Length: 68
Image (cartoon, rainbow, N blue to C red; front, side, top):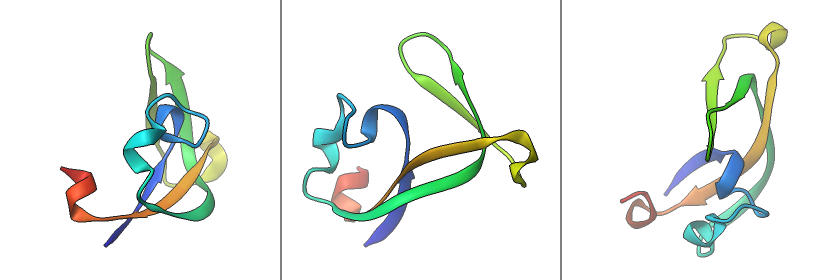
């Protein structure tokens, strides 16, 4: 099992959340960076500190099969 951080369409309210429906929801998460609107999906640029902003998301524990 692996923990992943998701934002955008993979979150509980996102249209692709069904991909994670068998995964364990750990909780809310936050990481330094910024989201950009690139059309049909958000793009993230991660940073080393929160001076660049923050990306709010969710943390899940997923199986290797889910990651394929």
